[in-house]
Image 1 (tube, rainbow, N blue to C red):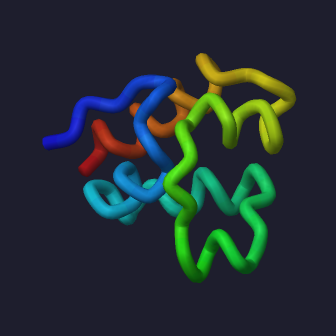
Image 2: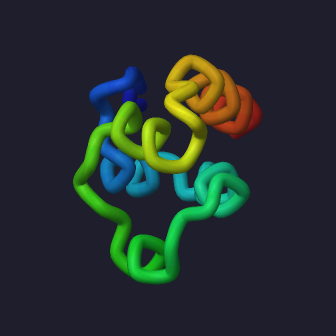
Image 3: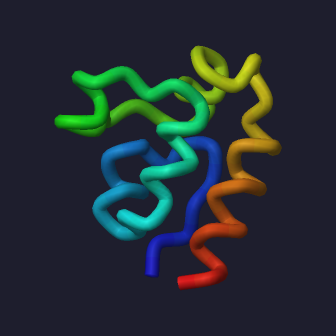
Length: 68
């Protein structure tokens, strides 16, 4: 099990929890990143796609992961 925080990469998270993919899609993950998830930390994704709301993104991701 992968513990996630703001420094976990999108790639690592999706490798461990593919069911979280929909969260990234809802926040506008581009087609290139969908095909090859980037090794960028979640705080970077949140800054670009969630208005900088890293805690909100982590909350959504943890909710999906908890259901798995």
